[in-house]
Image (cartoon, rainbow, N blue to C red; front, side, top):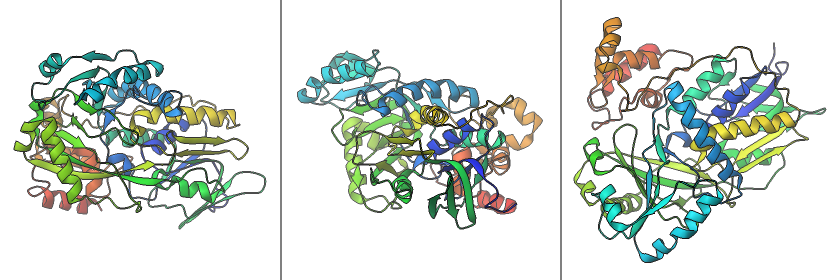
Length: 460
C-alpha cells in the first residue's frame, strides 16, 4: 500500500508530552492514528526540560482555558501517575513574600485561587514559615501555603502515554519532520514528510515550539511562538534535607519567578530563568543566567551553595503574545491547533488530550470505544519506592537487576537492557537517561559512560 493510499483517521504532529497524551487518548477509540515526531524519541524536546512541578492552577488567570485544563489535569495526572508507575509526590508549596509589597499581594492571589476553584490555600506568618522551612534564607515576611502542589517525573509521562498509544494500535513515526501541510479537496489533509505524504481526515497540531509554523501552513496567523529560555541548576542529593516543600516566588506579569524545589530523584532544583530568544533550537546555558541562579539559590537557601552542582540544563517554553493556551478547534476543517502550551503543559497534558478528543468528537470524529485497552506499567525511576537494585526477589529471579552499572544513580544492567527493548526502546544516550536515570548522577557518566555506550552500541 502506498503512502497516499494509507489514509489515517487522525495524524498528530509532535510527540512531546501533549502530543503523546493526545495520541493515547484517541487510541482508546476505534481510530487509525499516526503520531509523527521530528526528533529521534518521544518527549526529547521541551517536555524533558522543565521544573517538573504538578501544578494545581491556583495562580492561573481565571476564566482562561489554561486555568480550567491545569485544574482538571492535576486531578487526572494525580490518579494516572501511581497507576502506571510515574514518580509523583505531593510535597506542597510555599509562595514566599520577601518584602511588604509582595505580602500585600497575598489577598489578590488568594482571590485568584478561589476564582480558579482552589480553596485550600492559606497564609502562614513569618514564624510559622521558618518552622516549616528552617533553612530558608533570612528576610521573609510570610508565605501562602499551597498544600496540593507537587513534584513529578517529567521524563516518564510522555513515554507512558506513547507506550499506551502504541500498544493500543497507534502508529509512531520518529525522525519524521513535517515539511508541509495541505488541505485536500473534499476534506482532510496531506501531511508532507521526507519519507512521503500522510493522508488524514483530521489533523492535530501539537508541535510545541513549531506549532505556529504548522498553523501558518494552514493559513492561520493568530499567534507566534517566541522561545523563552529557562536555565536550571540541579544540586547534589546531599542538599535534599535543606528543603521540605517547593518554594515559589510571587509571580510577575511575565514569569512565575525563580523557585527552589526538591525533585523526585532526590536532588534540589533551582530555576528557571526567563529570557525570550529568537532561535528555537538554542538550549545553551549562559554565564549570566547561571550566576543569577546561584545568587537566587543563596538568597533562598544560603547553605545550598555549599553543595556540589550535579547538572545544569535549559528548556525552551513555547511562549506566545497571548496569556492563554492557543488551543483552537477549527471544526469545518477537522483541524485542532494545540499551541502556546507553556510550563503548565505537563500538569495539564491529560486534560488537554481529553479536551481535544471531546472537541474533535463534536466536530464529527467518530468515537467508538475499544473493548480492550492495554495495561501499562512503566519502570519506576523515582526515590519514593524501591528500585530494582534493592529488590531481593527481583534480583533472585533475574541477576541482571543486581548488577549495578551506574553507581551514582544505582541503575542496573537489567534496567538498561529493558530500556533498550520493549515497544518504545531507547535509541541514544539521552533516551537511556530518561528511561533509567543512568548518567544523571554526580559523575555525569565519567565512570559508567563507556559501559553504557557499549551496551547501546550492542543493541544498534
